[in-house]
Length: 435
Ligand code: PMP
Image (cartoon, rainbow, N blue to C red; front, side, top):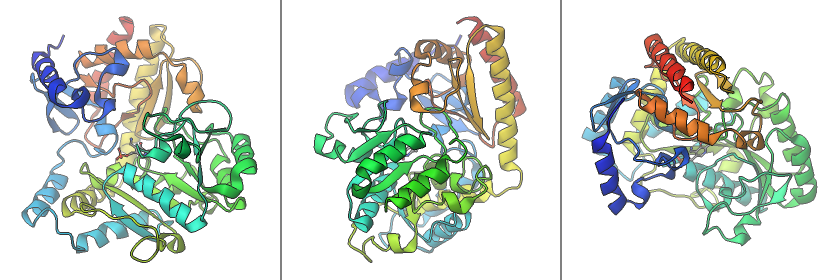
């Protein structure tokens, strides 16, 4: 098996200088039994090399953005060109218009957009804009949907029927948590009950239209339609957090996905974007209906700004990434690879008597160690984290890099090959046999 003395040494050093040794808690191996996370030094295509020169096939894809593989030359060229012309201007650029047009073309609900620097910022601002527009304060969200780390949405990932929020993080005041109501995903009755009770005070209902944060989970048939109509009846806005879902399943967003034929019935008022639209550099964006977006400064009273927003490197990388994703058949190829890998994992698990539930949506899937379907957060909670932790390490030791989380997705990229998939299935076979 793979040895990683250099990663271990760097982790010891990192712990002395960087809190927890990592710059995002999801990178720590706490959830998979601890130990030094692997320190990578280079990525190319579907592969990573760590500081001990071990090679890994990567399915983390940096939690989603790296859909064309690491260091794609077309994106790298765009970034180099941008850097050579100056990395930050603090003035408008023509590039921003190009990317804004591409987003609007792919996602017609975006009359106007604004670029920011992260998904967190994008979501946070949609909430401010919704509150400014409706002059109401409460937000309804769904248990287990992650919307970044701003105060309002770090509330009550917890279970249960519609409840007022309990903060998920120290430092979120109870007064803010009181503005958030959490209901189970895929449960229109619970949403209706929450709106019956708090609808007059509700500025917006926020949802990942296709969930990426407690597994890959599709909305039940009619869920988004019902969500939109109930929300509008209450005079509130519909906000879609498409930070993961946009450009993940096809060239467009969940709201324009073929699985939802009545597009008008599910169209949101505001959308938050991030990840893929920056081609691997920091980015976020939000947008929506003209009258709502015109609440934003300098046109309206809702303030939002950003020194780094719309920086030429991020915008150029985003344009280059979306250009690549326009290649015909590119999403079908990722879909086929994911289907092959999912089937291989499922067969290998079965052969070894391991319960495994796979939710595949096009080129991504989640694999839960449990024997029942996953359609909401509650159901995802009793999947076997200990078993996953062992599986994770057995895969890592065979050169397969997954997210260290029992319900994070496996992401295909345009760089993965059939041979990578075969190698991964072989590794999984061995890992399952050792569990
Ligand atoms: N929304 C969703 C659906 C996400 O998955 C994430 C990040 N995983 C965010 C928002 C936050 O994005 P960022 O990490 O860029 O702030």
